Image (cartoon, rainbow, N blue to C red; front, side, top):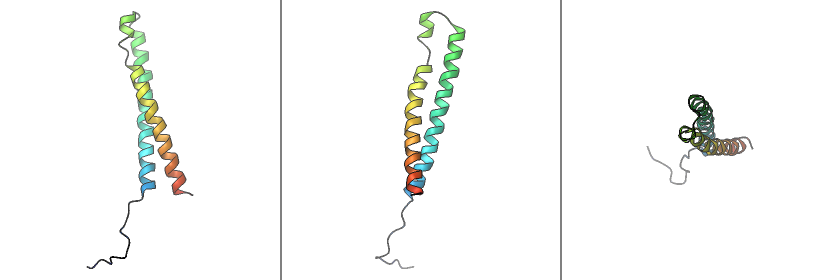
Amino acid sequence: MQVDPLEPAPQRDIRWILIVLGIAFVVVGVLLLAVASIVSDAVSAGCSSSPCASLDPGPWFDWMGLPFLGLGIVLLAVGLWWAFR
């Protein structure tokens, strides 16, 4: 099988990769935010002293969930805009 050197090489369609990555990041962000809420509620129900409250990992999940969610929304929006323009 000979390949025509003037024929362009097949390229991956980046817009669909962006859409899939966007959906994945949105799902991860939503899950992290949900876990943050559940963990914070469980820790606050289980302890009332301030040293115990300082061990609450809920804010960490919030701070990690928000960037994932934001990046996912941006990737999804760019991918959809690019696919349907």
